[in-house]
Length: 194
Image 1 (spheres, rainbow, N blue to C red):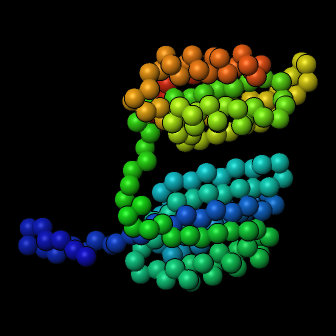
Image 2: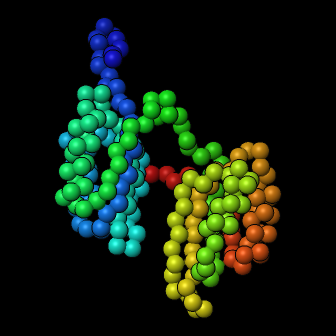
Image 3: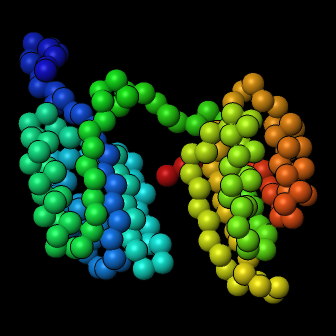
């Protein structure tokens, strides 16, 4: 694919997209090994989340893949990485019509939750958000030591539709907080300037 500008033809690489997800024992070199395969194949990381969870390392990447890359060969390279690093990896192409869609949050907010650790906190909060048709775009949670035992902290990034008044969301979350015995706060997420 190309275009003409000032009498010269320029070639534009066509990029498709894929998602890579995986998990395995935490160890030095996982990120470098994944990045090396992508670099050697001319792939670009578009979006990523990589984190250690207990003794495991979890990876989710969205990559752009040049049209000259044979997908089965890319999958084979990641199969080799699975063996060398004792990981489970899935490489899955994203259909072109989906890769063109933008999923950037229009009304991004942060829901922070804190309370004594017990089963059901994530369920109750996520169910309430779903009932209000609020999309969860990111969720991080951990248990830390507290004065009265383990404390559960959860940070949830959400996208609130224009059709829902923020005061209504605050009231619903406040009522939920009282019913399950946690603290819930809602605040807008500011854009980060890099």
